[in-house]
Length: 402
View (tube, one colour):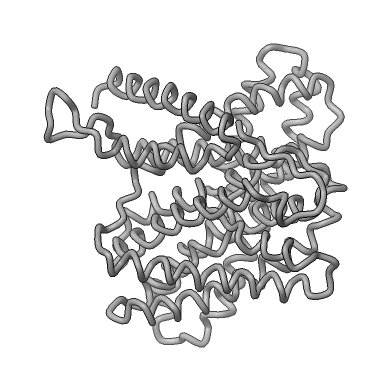
């Protein structure tokens, strides 16, 4: 496709995305599911001048680049709205849920996948399960306005906490499986697994803190200039790139950067953040439509039934994780059910899928079929539950339709 063709396609997607977002506002539901379904529908529209080609298409490199760019900006913008006091008040709950849910999902979903698809290899099923261990901050944070409800805060903080793990796990599993040094010593798998995650987390946090203080120093001198929003954008992207280059987690680094910026006392911080919010909204519209372009669920009734049943087990595992993690809490049964049903997948999982699609892992196409099926199912369920959140949660909950 020519540069002009790319621009025309992006303009068309933005226009249609705006219309769909407006529709979501009118019917009072988050726009995510409608944007994804729009992408699915557009992917089947043929080019009127050449019916053998789709109307809109993008190459893999473009999709991966857009996905990473969007993930970095959206995570930064979202985390910048949190204060350290708010995170501290619910972080312990979110961390417990993340650890228990990750463990149950890795084990339980892999075993359940083998039960439903006995002819598939353990590796492809483990990679699929690893990609399902988190909830998406881009979906969760964009679905609700700034709320004072502790249930919503727990859900939001959990999505930020578990995203780095969600992004890391599939690739760590691949590294362990393919690394020759552990081929003869599977007993070393668990300590190496934990060490790899710890080092990536430390490198990610360290990079975020370093660039956070650099950003504050730069903005203190340039905060009143028109170039300040551009500095913000450049630093968010640079933080992600440097963290990944140091073998840390870029998502975690950008999250820390956003927290430091959001809790600073800079002048004109609000006007600078308005720029990132506008850019973030534009990227959300584009990337969720592009996720729809990638979803290619096999038109197989048996696969569909098994996938829905597997998703039901996944929700059951999350519900068990919530019960275990909050067994001493004051949350009601309905609130725990709300947390269990709200496990949407979004940009982070899509970016993982983009990268996995070019890997040489056996049966990776089957893993991707399950991953994209779960993205669609999880967003549908989350959208429905979010729409009726007042039936589950005591107190006022504001849905963010735009």
